[in-house]
Length: 431
Image (cartoon, rainbow, N blue to C red):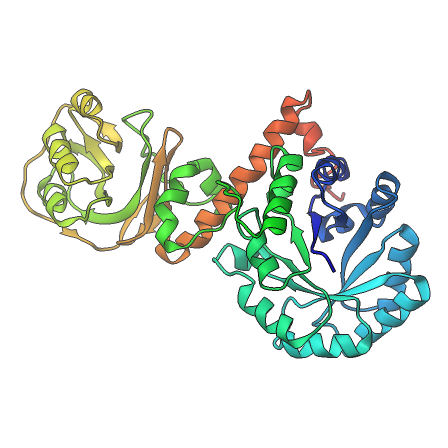
């Protein structure tokens, strides 16, 4: 089959899903999917609405069925779906029941290979069973850790002649790659549902699919460790704390150089209030791009000033975070060094040499270890554990991308409460 673009509407709000669907279809998408979140939030009425809106297009109900295959396939078909999904991890009898129901009710069955230990082997069985197509699905949580679908796609493509769908973080740069590797159905969620202009985004993705050439995009990509600084430089500290379930904020250590962004791995220092020996020594020990993070017990006198900042600039240190005091802030602002500190004071202490470097310290209740990532802006400063930095950076980008779309919808004469259907999703209290 000629490769097709399927837009995955993974929304909780039907109104928002329909708007993105209209834009994506204008851009060339011909398969429209009621995503699992949408079906869970609205039910099969979402499929009915999509069928009314797009009477001639292929409507997919992403049921992710695990049991009761006949019942669910019948319901999806009667709601207007052309295709519905069953999980490959379901029992063989459930998959076969879905296929039989599909024949009876006139609906194609797709098998989602998410979580299947041998996707190539199951794909061969699916071909024998009469499945319409199989779907390689890299879950969102794995995408955030930098995983992609190519290896699985190549194995499945070699194992079956069935159409193969691919889903999982695809965009205008990766769509061409999966088509070249054998994908027949390119399922795109975020790169369309979070795009400010989903029509243009769909056109770009289709152009990539048809020409085999990447169409560059800044957003909707998931990075690796080598791209951490770039990604964290694009997102805000509110994006990051949202990605970390509202954690990571170093309370009480605000910026003292407004308008400056701070990104880098931590070079940690523990010292006594006013003892500036170890913080200054850290300038020569830290690597270019590091952030010196100082635990000075949250008290003055100052352990940092203008001359230390001048030295740090010469060494290309990214900035300083001090749970304690800083001074000479007027001069530090003039030279453009980035600093966060609990207190500003004119008074410095003495270089006694107590303390240590590159040890785990604690600020605002959070352990900060050498190599943890530090990000700061006018909202404050956050710490990201080194071992989760790639995942958190990607999740923060996801937050940013979603906010971009919501901002656009608000500007179309709406409000945040209306866009998010806030009242509907308020927690219900049972008396």
